[in-house]
Each structure stands twice: as structure tokens, then as C-alpha cells.
Image (cartoon, rainbow, N blue to C red; front, top):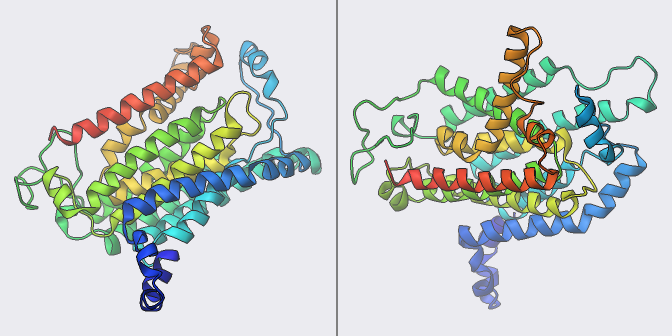
Length: 387
């Protein structure tokens, strides 16, 4: 909004000698880091008030696991307010509204993805966590198939929009693989053997990645600061990728798909990183508030949407390595449990609980997973130059 207002009033501001002070807003890198600071500040300012409101609504968490020892370890978290994700989502949306170019097609669909999944997660949290205030026998939360249906739905909408109106010709519809040269040196002409996605494959990948990442972040949100801290690292890594994708010369130099207008997504990633960083102020151990589905589902889905938009779905699997490691541990555990009729690979899944039950303190688990998140992000960024 401010960016558009600056363009609309540039002559008026110039006549009054104010234009030179505000033209820094034309630099997208400046707006991206201001977005991080603004989002961070908004969460800090409104955090305590929102937490008090959640407590008054009796929106507290009561973690229950199929493991007596883990229930004992997590007993101190009972009644801690959840749905704190509204802080991150609200700060991100407001920051995007103020600092992003609202005419940019990628920003518009980012609003839609974030809002859709926030409403989905909020509905699920509200139904589960206020069930005690409603009549006995009323439903507690959305059914898993209902959530998955809406996640796949927004994935299909976003994927179809990007395929038809977002990205350009076949040179930007490739499945970009790490270590594979996509374009001929010094040009944007495709190398032989690269995989160009058709409409069906493009939309299918969008659906699976958005739904999968959304659920992966949700599974990671199980310890104080774990999901929020990992999201900060992943968001800043995605900001770098958005910068590369949006710059013609940088994209060509790094053999990277150039997506015209994708640099504006730097404001989105900056706002997300700042919001998560501000949330850590209240979510660090001992947590005063939890993120809940209200935050985990939309933030995971937004990351995946950005990766699809800049054509870096595979790099997201590396950047979000912690999230997908957590999801894989659940899939392995469930599959092995069913196939062996009761045996387990991990003490408990997701895998952060496995290490917690193995003797690591919660702070050790969280800090070491943050370290892994940084390592995964570095691997992803280094791999760009190794094509």
C-alpha cells in the first residue's frame, strides 16, 4: 500500500522536497528487511494482549500422547494458551498490506493462501480447544480428511493460477533439480533432458507440496520454540531465493529460473520471518503461548507456495529438512506399527519426542534442531552454485 501510494504521489512529494526521503521504498531489499522488523514489532506490541484474550477464552492446550512417560514430561504445558499463530499471521498480513506491491500477482495469491489456511487452522483449533464449553458429544476439531481436502484445494487453486497467469513460458515451467544444469551457460535456453511440467503435473506438485509442507510444519510444532525458530531460518533462506529468482542477471549467473515479479515475494518472506521471530519472544521455554494449527498450517502452506512460484520445489525439501524429517518419522512409525502389529521404530513420533524420551532436555532438542535447520539452509544455498 505504501509502495503504491509513493508511486501515486511522487510528484506531489517531490514538489515539497519529501520524495528523496521516501524513494528508498523503491528498493525491494530495503522493504524486505523493513517488513521483517515491522512484523517483529507488531507481534511484540500485540503479543501480551492477545495471550490474555486467549486465556480468558480458555483456549488452552492439553497435550495427550500414546506414551505415559511423554505425557509426564509434557504435563507442565497443560492449559498454556494456543492459537498464538494469529499473532504471526496477523502481523504478516498487515505488513504485506503496508509494504508489498498489492498489484503483484504473486503477492495477491500469497494473501489468499495465507488467509485460507489460517481460517482452516483457526476453525480446527477453536473446535478442539473450546469443546469443554459446548454440549457433550459435540465434535472436537475438524476431521483429518476435511483439513486435507481444504489444503489440497488451495494447492490446486494456487497451482492453477501460477500455471496460467503467473510464470511465463516453458523455460520457467521446468522441475528444477539440485546439481542439474537447467539452462545453457549465459542464456535462458533450456538444456537437453530437463523436465518441463505440463499443466496436470504442475498443479499436482503444487497440491502435494502445499498440503505436505503445511502438515509437516504442524507436526513440528510440538516443543517450545521449535517450529517458530525453524521457520525463521527457512524464511530467510527463501528470501534469498526470491531475490535470485527476481533478478535477471543474478538468475542467469546462477543458472536459476528468472520469474518476473517474484522479487516482491521477498516482502512476504521477510514478514513471515519477522513474525516468527517476534513470536519466539513469547514461545521460548517456558512458552507463554503455542502456535497451534492457526499458525502452523498457513505458514507451512505459504512457504510451499513461494517455492512453487519461484520454481524451487526440490530446494524447499532441503531448506525445510527439519519439517520433512519430522513428517517422515510419523509416516515410518505408523507404517511400521501397522505392518508389524505393534512394533515401533521410534520411541515416539514425531522424532523430536524420540530424542526427548531418550534423555535430551527439551531445550537441547530445540537448539539442536535449530542447528540442523541452519545446516539444511546452507546446503540448499550452496547447491545453487554447484549446478
